[in-house]
Structures are given as C-alpha cells and as structure tokens.
Image (tube, rainbow, N blue to C red; front, side, top):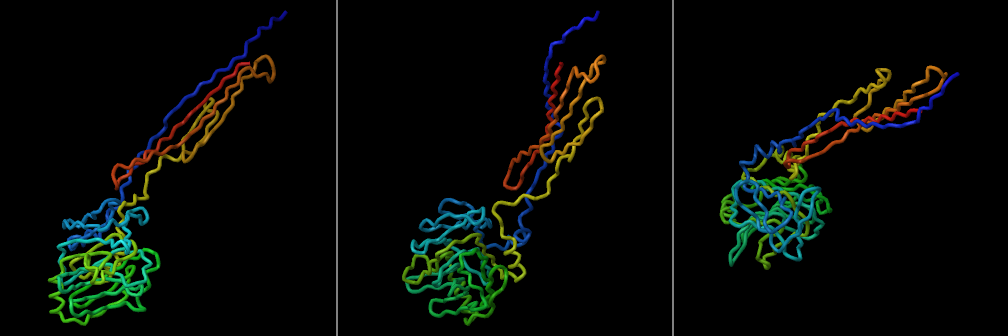
Length: 352
C-alpha cells in the first residue's frame, strides 16, 4: 500500500539590487587660447559682449573701459553665446569715451550684416564744434575699407575687388592693423589689402593725439550732420591692441574665436566594460556589457527522484545590468560625470 502526500504549489520571488561599480570623471575645459594669454598685456580693450542683457558691455581686458550701449541694441546669440544687433534706423551703437589712439593699433570684431550702404564698423574719432576726424574700419560697397580723416583731408585704403564681399548675412571676423600710415585689412584670418595712406606721418600723429572716443556701429556718435554711418547688423567679440599684429597673429585670433562658454574636453574615463555573473552553483557564467542595459536569464529545474521527468521545483533568475550617467557642471570650465552600474537580480521559485 502506498500513501500519496500532496504538496501545495507555492511561488516565492526575491529581488537583489547591487551597485556594482561607480566611475567618476572630472572633465575640465581646455585652457583659454594661449594666443590670448600671450597678447593680453597688449590689449587696449576687449569687449566679449557675453552679458546677454543690459546697456553696458564689460571690458574683459582689465583696463576698466566699460562700453555704453546706446539706444537699446538687441541682444541676440551667435551660436551659443550672446552678441549685439544694431538697428541703423534707431541709431544704435557702442561707445567708449576717453579712449585715446596710439601710433600702432590692431582692431578686430565679428560682424554679420547685409548692409549695402557705406557703414562704419569701428571708429576712433574726435569731434569739435567746427570739425571731426577719425581712424575707421568700415564697409564700402560690401567690402572692407580703412579710412583716416583729419577734419580737412582724408585718405582711404580699400580692399576693392580683392577683399571678399562680407555683407552676405554670414558671420565674418574682420579687422585692421595700422603702424603710422601703413595699414592692412583682414577678413576671416587672411590679409586682403595692405598699403600706405596718403597722409604725412605728422598729420597722422596729430590725428591720433586728438581722438578720444571709440565707437562700434557708427562713425561719430551724436553728430547726425557728420554722416554717422550707422550699422544695420550684428557684432561680437571686439578687440583692440596697441600694436600692429603680424598676419600670423591675426590668423590665430581668427582661429581661436574666443568661445564665451569653454568647450569641455572629450577625454573621459569609462567604467569597466563587462561584469561577470555566475548562477546555479557555477553552472552558468556570462559576461554582461555595461555600456547599455544587458540581461541574462537562467532557469533551473529540480526533478523528482521517484518519477521520471517530473519537475517538482523551478527556479528562474533574471539579471539585468544598467548603466546611468549623471552630469554635474560645477563651474563654466569643469564638468563632473558620475557613471553608476547597477545589477538587479530577480529570482522566482515555484514549487509544484
């Protein structure tokens, strides 16, 4: 006589969460351009126009020559950084008072315009009740022109057909260098014109001694009768040096572009690529990738010793590995990325 005992079926589930590895990477932006570092002592002024709001442009050169933004020019963006748009009909421009010229100089800025009329980009000038004078970088027929005007006579260096047309609605890096009456014009890092202006060195010296106002986006601020040549377009990253930069230095200025938000370095330390998972008393081993979610499933059956192929207990295990990254920017130049790999094992046991 045999006695049969019935075992009630039951199911139990166990979940284990394990943080298997944590990798923290600190990424620091590349240092600001070495070109800037080497030349910053030569700055007469540098206005990055990175405020994005307000009526004042800070002087990042350390010279303390803050710029006044007249008639509320509009703050816009160039890429991810702020820049300024001047509306010519509203007589908008940037002004720095008490800014004296020097025998040598270099001036550069980024500009985006479709203006077809003669337009002043950059001017060092003087004004009196009787006359005006200026040392200018301007657009003439859509091309760069350097111009010196003493109040009675003037002389210009024009890029002519050699200089590319830049009133095309695209950002261009433009500028000039001057050593006395010798002037060169640059567009996007390349010299497009060079020559000697038809004024005596004595006249130019007197002119530089009289100039006391810097304007960007107009010629003679406040003298509407003196052809102020207001700009209709956008400007950014304005620089003036008290030396005539070499063509190689100008090209480096153009290439560096001085981003106002430093780009983080692309080198990061990744966590380990795989984790090894073993289940079933060493019977099953797998390597799961930590680069993305990865899953391994196993099933173990327990058979009866009295009945062939009779399963009395089934244990199913699912192991999932996930990787998450948390990015924290602590300063404008440092970003910390914490990568955490988490392993979740869920085991379900069913008794028949």
